[in-house]
Image (cartoon, rainbow, N blue to C red; front, side, top):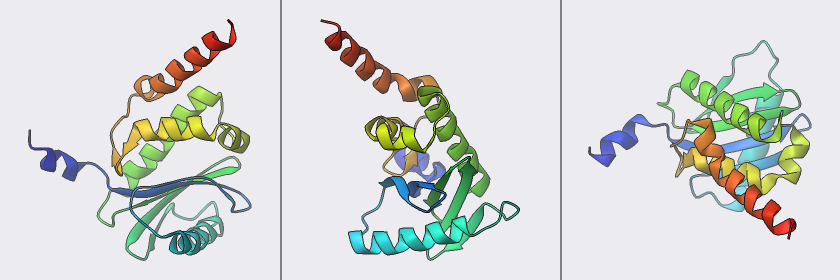
Length: 159
């Protein structure tokens, strides 16, 4: 089919942030060009807004020209900025799917896993989101490249 029509049905994700309860960003992945200064200001503002919302508050908020979708997992917050016309519930579901995939790899992902396994966390997310579009929802396929790398590293270490 026409790749344009396929692209229009997938979510346009602007960036993904994994943040701790203190508001420190532990992982960030951007899919649009934003200068470092603007990124720092936006991130701080968005993180503050998300963290200050009570548990009873809605997981969506409008920010500038984005829709922000966030979800808390124990001590980690996952924040995703998307186009204004995206479906918040499908994004919330996708966030959960990313966390479940990271859980499968890290066996219950936490802040330290992200900090000490940052390359692997990025690899997994890169399998699931490409150029701001959801591309992989199959957990096993999303984890395949990391599994291959781990296998290569463990066989190298055993010789």
